[in-house]
Every structure is written in structure tokens, then in C-alpha cells.
Amino acid sequence: MTATFVKSITDLSQAPPGKKPHIALVGRSNVGKSSLVNSLAGQKSLARVSATPGHTKTINFYEFVGRYFLVDLPGYGFTRASKSKQTGFTGLLNDYLSNASRLALALLVIDSRLGPTDADRQMQAALATAHVPTTIILNKVDKITRAQLTTLVKKLSEEYPDTKFISHSTLSNKDRGELLDVIEQAVRVA
Ligand code: GDP
Image 1 (cartoon, rainbow, N blue to C red):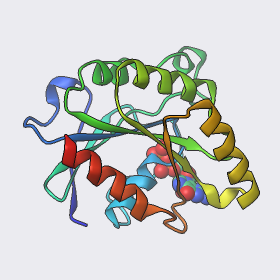
Image 2 (cartoon, protein in one colour):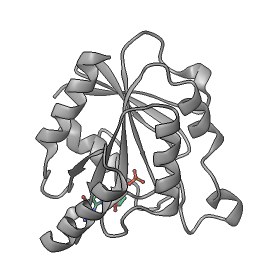
Image 3 (cartoon, helix red, strand yellow):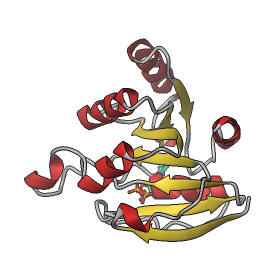
Image 4 (spheres, protein in one colour):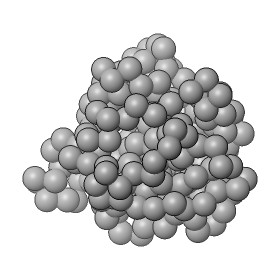
């Protein structure tokens, strides 16, 4: 997979120009978005994997196979952040979502150990309101049992009947192929 880091931006005016579709990664801080970028790219250190959560305040653009941008959006809901930083999504995340005409698909990454948090549910609702097609990634499934995963998927399917779920673990690259297929399909119809 040819994937390159393009830029990190702090203001939407700095976003790369052009008409290539965007595939957005959204999720709480530390859920494993940077690791997922590396896993999808099949590269070890394309995205910096932070040991200290809550630091990514930028939007990071990666260009995949010259056809689309994988857009890593700022993580939300970091529990150890100060109170003022815990509530709501950052301005940059909101700005992106309200101006995202090239957004073909959002990948909402959820920690499979926690299930959806209140912030994840708010994010899902915001994406639905903006009519952004969304697939939910249940990440870090190496940390739960198969039975726990089955229970979680059943619960989520009831809560979000029209949403596709894909489990993933950076350790095993579980279901990476299915995830790439979903991205490919979204890029094709964009
Ligand atoms: P981000 O803040 O969402 O970009 O999260 P990172 O990719 O920086 O990952 C946060 C932490 O979770 C790091 O310590 C990663 O090594 C770890 N991590 C990420 N994905 C997985 C996974 O699938 N399984 C396990 N066990 N740990 C993971």
C-alpha cells in the first residue's frame, strides 16, 4: 500500500486542495487511531503512536495510493484532560465536520473494552445529523474475549441497526482486508 504523510494542520484553510475524497478517522484520544493509520498503510511509523494520550490537536492528512486522503481528526473525551477540555468536541473537529464536502466515509473508532462512551454516542449522532456515511471500528479486540465481542456487536447492532461494524486489532491486523474494502467502496462512489 503506497501511503504518504501529507501534512498536519491547525486551521482548515491549510487543508490540501483538490477533489480527492476524504476518509475520516474519528474517536476518543488513545483509542488507537494512529496505530490504525499505520495498520492500514502496512507501515510501522507513518503516524506517530503516542504513549502519552491527548496530545493530538491537529488534523493529520495521509494520502493513500494517490487516490484519497485518510484524515486523522483530533481525538475527543480524554478523561485525564482538564475539565474544560473534556466537554464537547474541539473547534477544529467541529469545523471540519461542518465543512466536509469531500467526506466520503467516517470511521468511528471505539474501544471494544469500553463499548461506546457518551462522547462516542454524541459523535455518532453528529455524523448521522450531517448525513456522513459511518462505519464503526471496534478496536483493540485482542483485549476482549470472543464472547465479549459477540455481546458488544449484538448490543451495537440493536442500537445502530443501519451501521456496519468491523472489529480490529493492531496486534493481529484483524479484519484489515474488510476495512480496506469498505474504504475502497466509499472512494469508488465518491
Ligand atoms: P490515538 O491517540 O487514537 O492515535 O491512539 P494510538 O494509536 O497512539 O494508541 C494509543 C495506545 O493504544 C498505544 O499505546 C497503542 O500501542 C495502543 N493500541 C493501539 N491499537 C491497539 C490494539 O489494537 N490493541 C492493543 N492492545 N493496543 C493498541
